[in-house]
Length: 374
Image 1 (tube, helix red, strand yellow):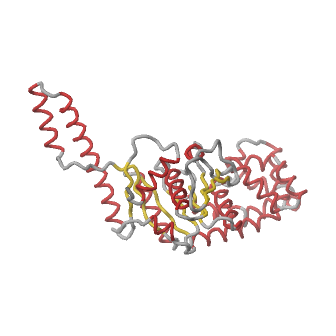
Image 2 (tube, rainbow, N blue to C red):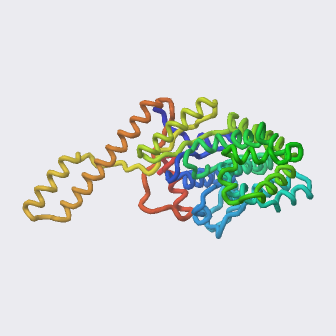
């Protein structure tokens, strides 16, 4: 097993996009922010895109809030060689902006005012993942930053981020669109058939719209939106190719827990099957033990102290040490199992911090731990 060289990744001018991915609750947002801070301090003009609903990134960067456009980070004590900007994805606003950018003014207003659009733009399964990809494409096209760090959505599966462009592109194409765009020719039969046949695309959205109004809104939406379908497909294709390019690096983040490492393993396999560039794995929030006293000896010594009634505090410390050793051994076994299955994947282990990261100093500390810097 090799060591993941985060500084080497950051310092390589050919690295243009770093995607931090993994299952929910493993520290993707903190990792992405720490990488971006470190990159700016090492001379890169970086922007970090987060899809984190808790808004922790804004707090850690000393900002009151983040919006749907990048904001330069200027806080006391932060004077990087390069530059850092940050933003948080607003899914609905990104969708609205995309409609305005790729449709004429009249058609855009028709789409934005349509009740059917307002429903699917906020509740269609996969919209958040697709809009994250859309925003990534916009940031690359702007050419303002030489490094873009992406914190992927907290999906049920980390694979959703990869699937979103192709899934939405496919959904807005083919047989279903032909049915929806031909209501006049079919006397409304096309839409009714889509709804009654139980197509999955709008299952969540249509639950909030009923009866004839659904059919009218859906028909008006598709007719107004029709000219944009080709643009969806083309942008999805370009974003997918961007993710496969040599300038992109995927960093998989996992906690030393069975589910998180299992998800990381699936993602590693998927990246390999799609020929996407994997930089390595960050095993986050580990609990290494520096002392060499084995757990059984610690427990035995604690029992002896308790039996004599002497040094109760020392006995408690010995029991805590034994618990910590057991936890570290469990984590090591889980990571060893992952390593055996994926021996070529570079790793870096980041010890757990005593408290949540809430400021720039905490992000710097995480960055140091990502690179084993004192």
